[in-house]
Image (cartoon, rainbow, N blue to C red):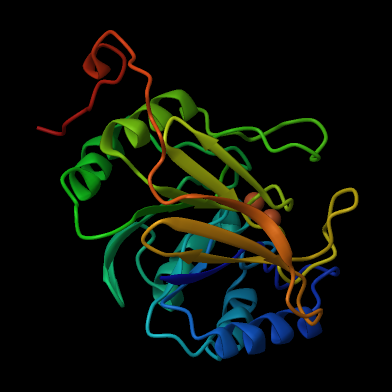
Length: 268
Ligand SMILES: [Fe+2]
Ligand SMILES: [Fe+2]
């Protein structure tokens, strides 16, 4: 299975670069991925014109499964209404077929209107669990804009999911393989408790940090290995970002029971 992961497009920013986005889209199309995961911050202020302009560009992605997640910038100015109208529901589950299986892909909206901070929220836990638990036809992939773990090279850490501990425990409990995130504008991969958390940088803006250029990720999953390549738009093949075995080696046990930590709220 081949995935292109990009995020932090930031149409509307003075630092947005159409040449980078066009190159990233052209390269994505030549890669012929099974899934293109666009993990939030399509816009700068959540304005209608920014979403429309972003859609005008992103509609050139030639892939049957292009999935979008909300970013905190998209939740400004009541932008979630435009997001839903132009890019689909903010929280959905998809089955993405590929040669050799089917992946379950879930998008979560970790944003709150007009806040930069992220939170999943207890009321979403039961749904998240039900989508992933028992899935055995291929990879389990979560798309969420905010970071669950701090990303190095980003300066002072802010906006981490306020319920990161609960969310991480759920992901381990239900055996999520890959988490695709953005937000920090620095590409990085954590592998922890069998969950691989993959951050993409900003694909098409100069809102960069430190030495990391604008970039996106190419993720190749085969039956035994996962390879992640960091690509700079318009600069060729890229460089390795991470590689790991398809199935995480877990020899550790943790007690007590999951349910003593995380409570699933239910609406009655
Ligand atoms: Fe961003
Ligand atoms: Fe963000």
